[in-house]
Structures are given as C-alpha cells and as structure tokens.
Image (cartoon, rainbow, N blue to C red; front, side, top):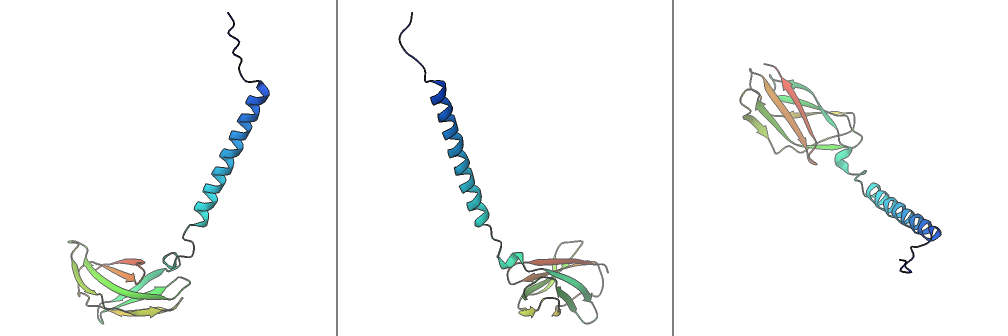
Length: 134
C-alpha cells in the first residue's frame, strides 16, 4: 500500500543541514566574541600586584613592594596569630600609595615573639600574605 506520502528529496535535506550548521556556527561565533570582548582585561585589580618584602618586629614596620604596573594604595594590614587564627593587631586606617617597583612602609603593632601571619590589603582588594616565624 502506498499512501502517496513522499519524504523530502536528498538535495533539500542536505541544504537544510548546511543552513542549520551555518546558523549554529554564526551563533557560536557571536556568543564567544561577546564573552571575550566583555572580559575584564583592563580591571585595575588584575594589574595591581604587591609583595611583603619584610617585617621589622623591633620597629613595628611591614615593608611592602609594588611588583605591579600601576600605583597601589595600601588600605589595611593585619597581624594574625598562626596558631589560633586570631587577629592580634591591625591597622585599617592606612592610606599609603606605593609606585610601581617601590617599597612602602606600613606601621602596625607586631608581637615580639610567636609565629604570625601578616596580611596586607590594597584599596582595590588585592592581598599579600607572609608567614613570619617567631
């Protein structure tokens, strides 16, 4: 029994598959190019880099080096007891700018003994951490 229903020809089927593939490729390209274009490449947080160069327990000074390409502003420094995880002292009223390649000095009360963790934070949230044995 033939009902007279015929499928689409192979030429039309091939043309439809090619159109679907091209449309998918175009949509994928637009999505990927939009994602890459909107990436936060120029965000200052990705350019700021700091490093704790040293801790002077006698004079209560933390030395911070700007190893990035832009000026950073140190906003806070924390001294944490490594054993308990408790903040021993902090200075959150710091507003010290440091130019690229330069070293800044941050004052904070540092205990004379015991292993501590020193954490320095910039205004934009970039952090540097150093463990100082005591």
